[in-house]
Picture 1 (tube, rainbow over the protein chains, first blue to last red):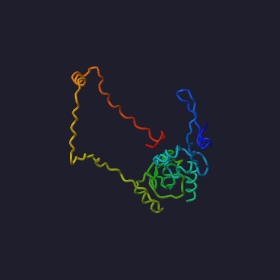
Picture 2: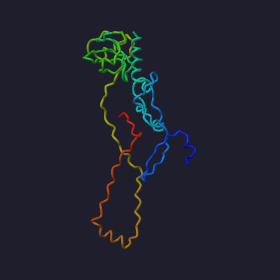
Picture 3: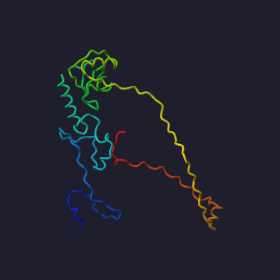
Picture 4: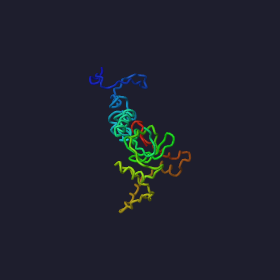
Length: 90
Length: 146
């Protein structure tokens, strides 16, 4: 009988085969979702998305790209923003 | 808009994105720029003209660029040249009150131990050297910038 707290789908289920060829279900935390661009909702690259406890202990430089709007906008949207800004300043 | 020497551009890619600079040199599709950014080569595709222009000679020095951009109220980034100084040497602290090593306890010698001490086994394997410790994996294999 499964423990009542494991019956909800909060935790993901992983089937693990043990050395004695017995298959058991392990319950693990779900990973957070991939970071998205604020403007176009595209998946952002260069941002890891492990469990929060691991992400918290990463150095700041490993958490997002080192350019303006890094971790907020994708490169396309970031460039479009600055091209517009340059043209406006004429 | 044509980009030539002296025109003010905005960098639109990389860590210098959003910063203004003047073009100093153009070679093929690469340009040498200086201003709010570092003095660096960039691809022309990563630059956007702002329509402003200053009088600059080809491959003008950093000071010339600084003077020219003052009129446009653009603060030029200055980099200090690195000077090789002396490396700090580690100095060991001398112990103020050296503690004497505790005397070894005298163990009772039994008949067996006496024999062993007298005839050390030639075949006995030499003491294993401690294997160098493997560095622990950090951050669950997530790539980090070096």
